[in-house]
Amino acid sequence: MKKSHLFATVCTCLTSIALLAVFATEAWSQASPVKATKSGVQSVQVSGMRDQDWKPYRTLLRGLDAYEANRFLAPETVFKFVLRPQSLDVDLKQIQLKVVGETVVLPVALDSDGSFALPRNQMAFDEDAELVLNQRQRSIRWNLLAIRTRGLPDHHRRIGDLRLTCEVFAAMEDWEKLKRQLGLRGVNSSNACISPRLHWTFFEARTLKSARLVNDQRSENLRLTSDGKGFIVYLFDQSWSDHSLIHLEFADGDELLDRPE
Image 1 (cartoon, one colour):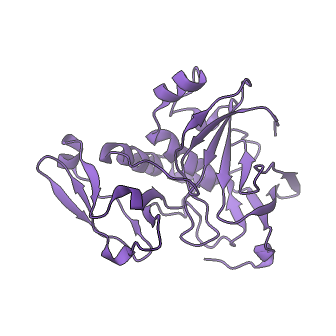
Image 2 (cartoon, helix red, strand yellow; image 1 turned 120 degrees about the vertical axis):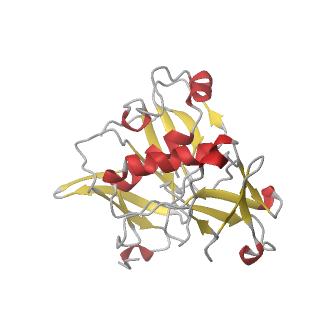
């Protein structure tokens, strides 16, 4: 895989988008402020460790559409959004979530972990509806639930899952804005995940000691972020199949426990 130590940073979702840690071992996706450097290679960071702005209903549906269109990348996954309290005094059991337009109001059921499936409703789409909480929005953040193949050990990440996470993130981003900020000519939602000009950083809830990409007898060590919270991977490289796995070693030593979900 191509490596570059100089890169511009697009702090974004998507996600593994992959998403937060409903379980402490899962990665999350989301969007953050953008920074640029002098290199021609950009980095997109996918994490649930940072705040993400609320997005309109239509935008979230674009992510759902992208998941369904690209599910062949990770067929043994499910896709939900998730709410995460930003303070200890927020009780998920007391949270009510609705899709609200000019005339339409759709209650959205929350699971005990704060995750929810986004309902499809044409009237809500036509009215450019928003997601509304009975809490201050700053006290709750949403993110993409980790797109994660069922049965994977806690310390494994599947490349196909990450590629699908990328597609969901890319569908929800404002690429015209990113192109203005970073000069990303020719990059858009349809090719961002296969562009050699971008590499992607996936964050974990726990500090990493190492990340190794493995496929049969082939392996490669991946670069980590400076704080050890994320690993950096080029998703465009098709020489690594969707079934390739990233073996994570956590600083706390729990990487040896193969606990399937």
